[in-house]
Length: 212
Image 1: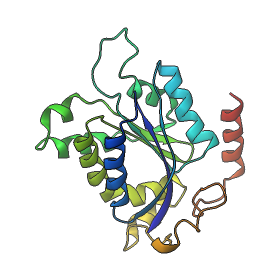
Image 2: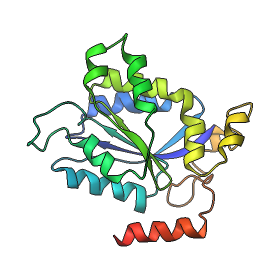
Image 3: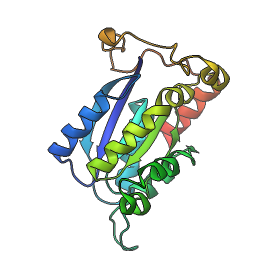
């Protein structure tokens, strides 16, 4: 099982029932042992959401950042449903195939939601970012579908060789921890112990982001 630290940003508010439901879904994802680093509510203008996302990626250095809500259509001038725009602003690399695939898979179950939600997915630093819709059933379907590629995707984001990941019999899950030992396997800050060391150029880029 692959250990990954995860933070969840709820927009515009944290609904306890939906949170408990999604946490249960996350605990059941195959091949992953997730350590929930932080779960918080974020609301307001786009720049507020951007700053919260940057902090999770650049300072907390979580492996996986999930946002929940804020991905539906809204009037242009209003500061509502701003999560996709905020995500595009902080991404360094996009994953253009991930969300279209999830929407196509969800079409038979929830066609209206699959067409109208506008979430994004991509990478900042060594953090995978995925927007989930506010509808908890649709969000759960996205997570359960994405689970088919999450382990190799997270490993590539952490710097593993794509060729090795894709040709491994277990799709790269050789970098594993025993589920019973997952929490002790994290460092004192709750970060996963499988993270490869940064190259000098990567570290310089990280410092630039923190200074900006």
